Image 1 (spheres, rainbow, N blue to C red):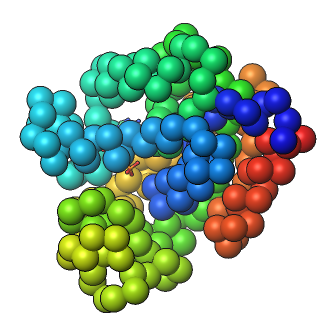
Image 2: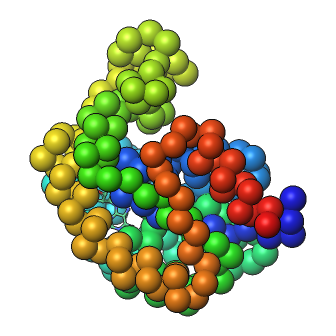
Length: 218
Ligand code: AMP
């Protein structure tokens, strides 16, 4: 594995449902690097009923983006905890989602690579409609390609599985449109720096994972 791989600072971009979270989790395990998902962080804050969670929830339920000042402040804290300003690596999933966030991130840390997982709107709706999340531990499943062993129950803790509030078809479409509008600026920002790597998201999970590892090894 190349030097880059020992403690890389990586971002995974892509539409909701493109598989960012799945790839980030696989990569985090492989590289033994922290995986920071803004969606998971925010949902945890909502579950705990914190001030941040209360401020974020209404935006999340509607499928809107949480305002930049709220999310940038929260991520700066998490990056410090993960050693973002030192030599430790991390994998960001769901952040940055706006050019403002990308600029704030680049003033805090120097990224090594940014992966963009690409997927069409139809496939996004199909996948997210089949997503289920454990109500207790937050583990994700997908009825299409990663179903639980027992229908409607979490493999890990046995609690009930449910659809996310923001995975209804109309909210999914809203999130996708918002993503299209916001993501171009972020992608161009990294393209201009020569660190953007594009990957087709309509492939098996293991193949996308391998493509990411191959790029890191180059
Ligand atoms: P996700 O699990 O990544 O789909 O995120 C779920 C929701 O959390 C999004 O629809 C937004 O409301 C919010 N969220 C997550 N990441 C961000 C971000 N970087 N900026 C603003 N809102 C975010």
